[in-house]
Length: 289
Image (cartoon, rainbow, N blue to C red; front, side):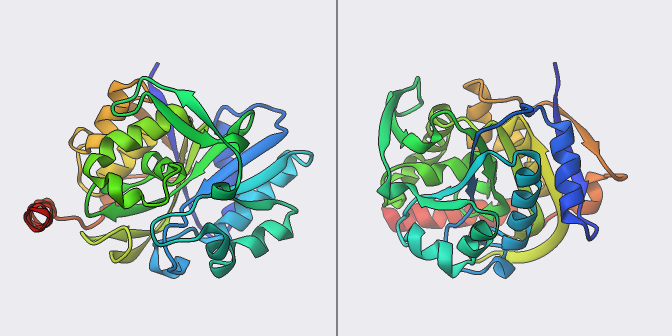
């Protein structure tokens, strides 16, 4: 059965768009524990398109709390090479949004972890946050270009939960690590913030912000990422971590699109130079040597 990817245009009522998406995704009627992984990769405000938009997170929490008033909802993030999750929750105003709805922000680096066995591309065992056990897991990425992986979206968002703080040490096998993290931490749904996105060849931090004005969602994280790759003019098969994730049965690169407006991909093209990408990668390889 062909997977579905849902696209909603943000036209002033963000809650309406989120409700429309959730109405069409297969979600249990009753949830008691929800974990949301946003994109909080750097000390850069949402206006740069680098990090989670607190206004869209606010709308998402409002809709979820209305639908699941008894559920515990936790925003989770992990420490990274140059980021302390405890600090970034406050710096990016994420904690004030979660407090508004009686939710929590949790730095998983300070929590309990457990080892799970996977048939990974690099790892056979990987540690995951214990808080994910029994939770309905929503990955909530930003759509951005990336100098190493071409784009970062739902699949790469899970790499942020890889336990090691110095994730930069694993960039030489980043595609394999992305796949392995998703094998160990499978998101139930992916909701992509494609409102203010990042285009150009210098993401995920220094690319150019552009308002696309969309929210994208799917039960199939590979399908959602495959559509997002096409915004940049990329064949999903040319994005190594998407292709490898599909080969490991994490999802399907074939999908149907259902939208709440007359969606045409040609109207939403993002700037990305394949030639510049390969020149940057070649230059980086030369520096490492």
